[in-house]
Length: 286
Image 1 (cartoon, rainbow, N blue to C red):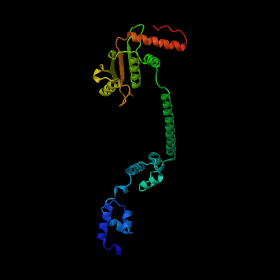
Image 2: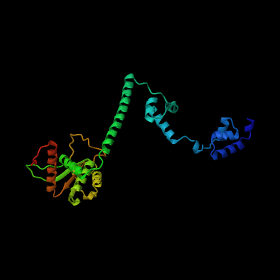
Image 3: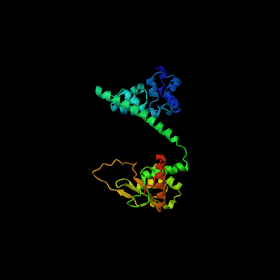
Image 4: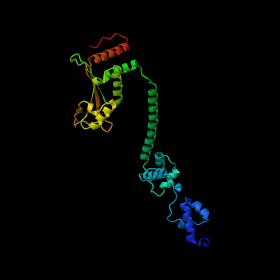
């Protein structure tokens, strides 16, 4: 202990070196202090420099690992959840109580669940890849292709004229924003003037109506105040609604005024498509 006799002078040097940003090892080597207890006393109250601290990300992983361990997860399960090594997990949670060993049946169920989760992930990757290839295979649309798409789109989702009730009006209703965008592009292709297009919202009465109106108005590029009167669907307490949550925005109704001629072109175009497919001359349905 003789070389540590002037403790205060040594502490002054140690503190000065610490404030310069030196690590414990560097201070120990500089002052030739081989006793860790003495070094601790010399540096007492002096915070470590930032560069010597562990990354925050590691601290977050450690905290999460301890949280999962307290929930009863095994090392293997924590490793799958966090993606870090089991040796690190062991160091972080070794002071925590071990989870109770699960019955063999439950272990088998968890193992099966793990395999199925992996299988679902693999399937999802394949699903997304198929969609990506299909999307990229479309490319640009010609005017003729867009015309045919629009006719088929309207005939599946638009209002129809009946022989017993003549209503040759083009009214299109849908909840899919993509369908709405394609339909509006089709109307532009047919030179339907914007002032002839009327939009309104149809939605369940318990939904967030102002948010839905703002969404649809933004999609079609108009002010919400320019929408027509919103149609509310009444709730039947005997039924359970599935179309709930923030993603539910009801439907957009698109009406084209003075649209008798447009409707006839749509119906004629559809009959032409059917005739081309069947290879036979198709009379107009009406």
